Image 1: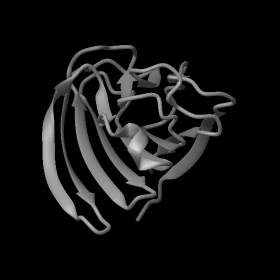
Image 2 (image 1 turned 60 degrees about the vertical axis):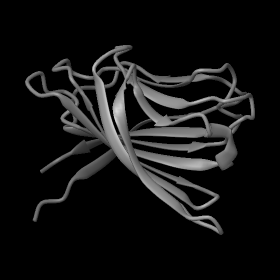
Image 3 (image 1 turned 30 degrees about the vertical axis):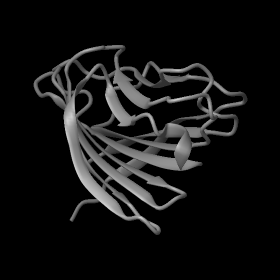
Amino acid sequence: MPTATYEKIQTYTAASAQDTITFSSIPSTYTDLILISHIVPVNNGAAYLGIRFNDSASGYVFGGSYWTGGSSTTRGVYGGTDSQIEIIGNQFQSFGAFTVHSDIFDYISTSVYKTALTHIRTVDNTSRSLATTWTSTNAISKITIKTNIAACIGSGSMFTLYGILRA
């Protein structure tokens, strides 16, 4: 069975609190992308975390599930449409540090919609999984991670974008 080759494209570490991280000029030499984010949130109110492709503010359809562990276990499903992939809603700051792993498939194809599978794991034992389709056939050349309130992504947050070559 062939194995995929992972190559680091770029790593960014926030030196100060900010609301936007951008990976631009993404090379078109891979088949898929993986974005790994280790985020230290800053408590600036009811912020959400989202991902947007090519600055497009439309065409995102998503569905997912969540599980909250600990003394009060809750689970459920959610879905809808948005102006971006809304990774974490208004409880962004309540999680403490968390990790987001997003697989973005066929990002250079101009004949298919783009699909991203995202998994979030928080220090308080919350887990979320999300499948998103960006209903565009445009190749992805830019990824923006953003919050709706200024300076919510804390200093020391780290984002790494990998390219994958499927054999």
